Image (cartoon, rainbow, N blue to C red; front, side):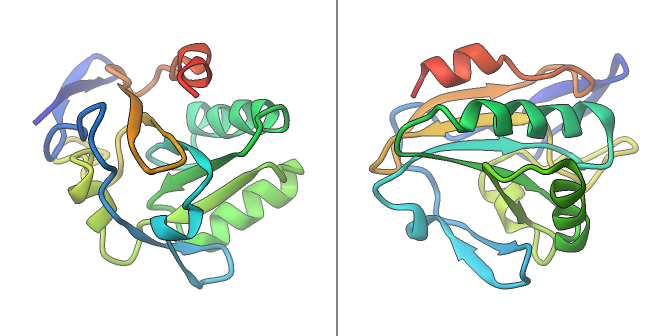
Length: 165
């Protein structure tokens, strides 16, 4: 269990992030067309997993915008923006913002992604949502970098994440 903060108040996650050097756990998430998308579908591409509580908050929206901006310059890399938001909200946000370089995916149906990756928030006002995390995977699905952002109101370290690619 990781201990993080929300507004300086301690909250806990469901576990620890997968270890750098390990194979990323498989997942199945819902895309903005309400179809199913799995990790296996991205085999052969580097991945940035930008994980956050809700695209409806300022910091979460900022991270999607930042990674969208950076994604256009990345070779053989896809940016997956993952939350428990409904796919409708994700699609609406990206459409309104003109964000075309990221792929929005939702863990709203089962919450298994948050549990399997150890980043579901267990207590406090965001209980049940995903904590702010960045995970970088290589072309073979091996984890190269992780960051559990210690204060949910803070943005991730974009430079370190991109450098890990």
